[in-house]
Length: 120
Image (cartoon, rainbow, N blue to C red):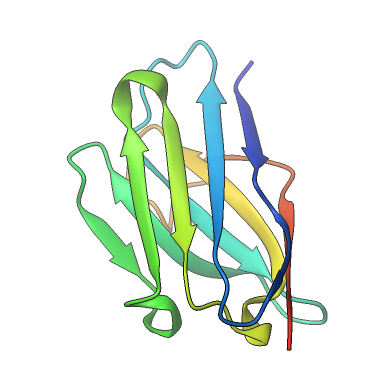
């Protein structure tokens, strides 16, 4: 059974930083791509960033230049370094791991989420 576990959320003031981590494990072996989505209160879940096993990355425009995604293929872990945080970044952040196909289209495996709260 695949498990995806996030960590690192918390409360931070606007302008501050947080680092989220996600570890995926299970019988599928390596994951083609891993990344993050977020869901703010009253809003739909939105794509944030992903990274492929070849370390190609993609970000939603609203976080470009502030967030950096990285991964350790050997450990099936992915990190999201979030700098210059804004109140609008407040959301539950979900990690997704995909074994094949396009990251944003594949069903993938999801974690339960970690809450990030940015105070103004």
